[in-house]
Image 1 (cartoon, helix red, strand yellow):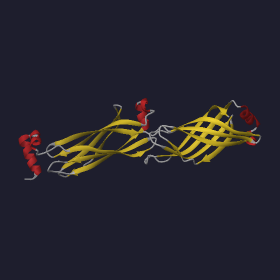
Image 2 (cartoon, rainbow, N blue to C red):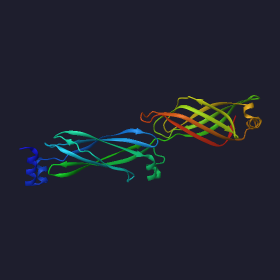
Image 3 (spheres, rainbow, N blue to C red):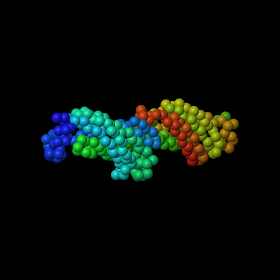
Image 4 (tube, rainbow, N blue to C red):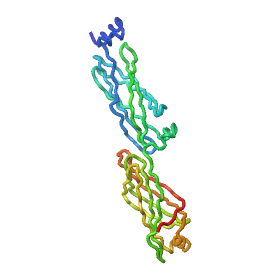
Length: 281
């Protein structure tokens, strides 16, 4: 007698609990093999969850739908349902892949506590439904916990404006910038364009390829030499530089930044800072 007919006969005679006790049928097994990060930028993170689904019975069963829910801080972030429909042969294991993505704007809307976070814990709850002969629809739950990496843009500030030399022809300055990497992985400044205004007057601009490593969770100093000629700056600004005191400044900063994360490709970064600073001699 075929296994499926034997199962039907036993079900009619004894019921499901007896079948489980005797081993005539067993509940399918579902476990999370891995949740893999497949894409990452400053707007979203993309994942692929891989589930191993095993049919321990001596007859084939059919996969129904995989329902899932992603929670962050006890709040639902993502939910959905993925229809399968495959036939799972007797004694076989099959991998089911569930792609999903997380929008960081949605995360920050849930809680202000994630504003400074670089990794955010999550809980994935899923259930695989099976269409079992004569038994009917069966849902097997599975749970997984992990972390969502959230890359953050660097912070830039003007640390100092140093005077190195002063003559009738002009002044030599060093612009000292502090670039803080807020992430738990390294960033690299690959290309940098900058412009500086002092007291409302453009005094310097240029391009660098510093290949500067920004170590994780640290501030790195970037020193940019500038030569301001008397003819370029004008008498009023040169006199202000000679006297010292507070100067109004504005810095425009455009760069190309890479990272040590394979999935986070090089990205453009621009910043503008303005305020007052005292010339250091």
